[in-house]
Image (cartoon, rainbow, N blue to C red):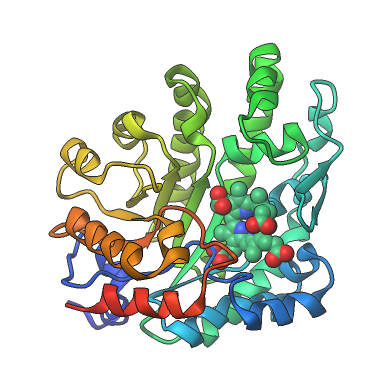
Length: 348
Ligand code: CP3
């Protein structure tokens, strides 16, 4: 091993992404910077709006580092949101307490063309935050950046809000396939630029969050999830060859096999409902998997948590594994349960 490799090898999560296996897996939690932490709520209260927090480099860096200081997770994730990209494409993005995100105006067939210019400078505070976090992280902590997948981000841009069954965006794609494909193209290209810039500023891994991949029937999954993700990953690899890429096509189930055959990711994150045994038998023991404890078992604690962690460790054991939840940590999660989780995962 050359000396230049040594710092990287101290990072357990990077080693797993290169195929190494550990008796106790490296761990981080999706949404680990967030409302379950009192120190986050304190910063959030003085930041103004949620987007003000995302675009304040010092405060965004501070909340990214909070879970590392408190829990010593193996990886820090940049504090931001997948919806900063629609903001940089010109949509007005806001978050209302109890309502989730709002994007205005919701895109129509005729207005899509007005949202194709990527105003990259609108994201420069995020890249400043990346630089601040990078210099403050412990040597053993891996640094993760992220974006949303084109499909998931498009679903918010078309609906103008979150939606349960994605009927607005799926209907739009049926009615206006050409306009929708243009929006997806815009998002692929902006996401490549954005993630390449995050890599240049200091992230070592990126995760592509496709929260709504699982709701697509197979032919639409191929057109709107796999195909754009292939282009995103290939484009990004050409720009940032040493960057590690994790994909999270949430709850893709039986479609995971075709996803991994086409998308050259370094790791695959599994949602809560995935059957890890089935995924392993389809993908083999070399696939690097991340996941997938039920976030509700972490809220419940006690027996539910202990059984859940044991099941996850057994199911993923003996192959490269990054311990995580199957979706984001919930705001009502008690901190003592997170502490217990860490003890259970780190026990040999
Ligand atoms: O993981 C982390 O700690 C990094 C930060 C992060 C946030 N959002 C912060 C956030 C990440 C990685 C995301 C990703 C994200 N954002 C996804 C993909 C993952 C998933 O959960 O499926 C999606 C779909 C979004 C869009 C989004 N942002 C929604 C639907 C909401 C509202 C729901 C909610 O939890 O309030 C947000 C707001 C948001 N993003 C919050 C945080 C901490 C809460 C807002 C607040 O603190 O006021």
